[in-house]
Length: 304
Image (cartoon, rainbow, N blue to C red):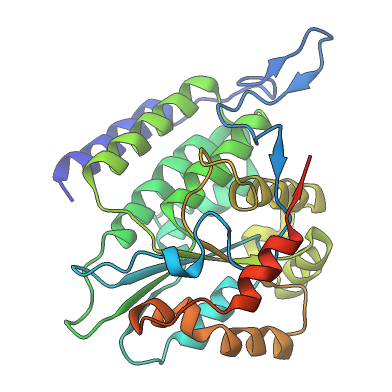
């Protein structure tokens, strides 16, 4: 990654620090004066999917296994869905490099806790936080494998998540000014064109907002004390729009959906049952997708 990226980040932070936004900045109104999303990405109005299994956009047989780098898989889901639990489950598996969310980076930027600042005053600090998150995810997602024997790189969330989930929600909710959104989008486009951030599979830990809300309260992370159920509902909708839509403007990466509302024991059992898929072994060993998987996806599709 070039030094220009780091320089760009520093300049962006200087430009945005200290600026306070009103609640309605970045929000568009319809003809009736009601708030409506100003997002550049909207779900397909004619076709929707509701599936639990492999995404029909990229069934298992269509997963592209790279020859010049490890298989890359990103674990996605709402706050409290169990992403770090899945990462830790595979952490000791030989040949797998795992990357937990860089919370400590966000908590200490030259002594500044950006995560806490963002949660305590989202209008003041969200843009700075989003810029830094995008930078740190870029650093992680372009990391070189730890050894020549590494066959899988597994990330807790991705730079794609930052762009198509958190950033879109912040813009729709009016937390992110239109100018800030445009700069972040342009930066993401540059990254996509100049850096290898490709993912081979997304594992979506799909959960209800109510379930993760109880988990967030139980784990008592200091920065999350202000996280509300409404915020988690918004994040859930953003994940659904990003990963459960068949609109290719949102996502073309194959998605494996797991039920994260279950108990820890049941969730771990899902990990075991889907281990070959999660680690790309099905494709690497030239296994064919199980016919039952294909049929389950087809049966669960519905069209409007």
